[in-house]
Image 1: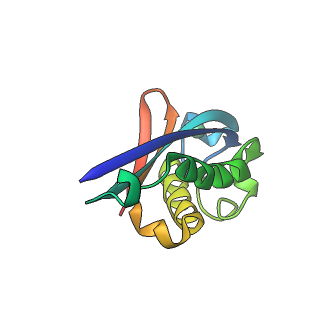
Image 2 (image 1 turned 45 degrees about the horizontal axis):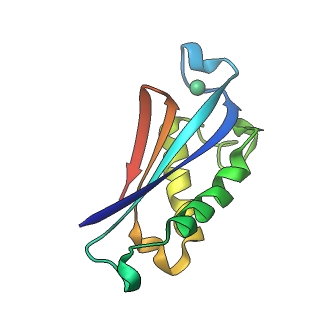
Length: 122
Ligand SMILES: [Zn+2]
């Protein structure tokens, strides 16, 4: 089994509505996002997916969130902009960007800080 991973970043503000603690107040994060694909074998040329294709598919999604107030953006205007929900959202949106290669996508991890991450995987 092969696993390939790229790392993306975006900066955004959020506040958790249904939460009591530091994150209920408006604040920002420099999010780090790890996007991983897995495959049992490589395709032509000995690669699973071109890293640049994976990076550009991920960037198209992350750019939509960069420098925003997440609570004002779909779907986070209705669901909590938690690291867990952001990871699940990114997974489905990046899968959509990968089109016919969506099945390769394995996991999306969202790091809110250097020591805290949430991962969504299939
Ligand atoms: Zn936060």
